[in-house]
Image (cartoon, rainbow, N blue to C red; front, side, top):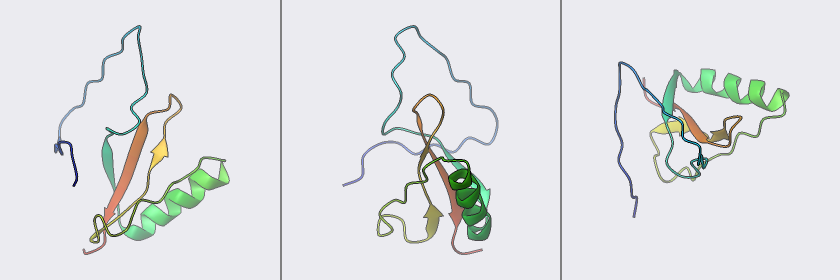
Length: 85
C-alpha cells in the first residue's frame, strides 16, 4: 500500500527552514528531467562525482524511469522520466 500525497506544482515551491531541522527520509520532491536517456546521463554524472543514485522497485511505477538521490543536507530527491513519450 502506497501512502502519502502526490502534488503537481508548475509554478513555485517555497521551502522554509527551522532550527530543529530533520532531513526528509521518505517524503520528497520529484522532478521531471526529460527522457529516460537524459535520466541515464544524470545518473552517470552523479555517480562520476561520487553521489549514489539509488534505484527504486521497478514494479511500483512501471511507466516511469526514476531513481532516488540525497541532496547535500540529507533530503531525498526523485528525478523521474516518463518511459512512454
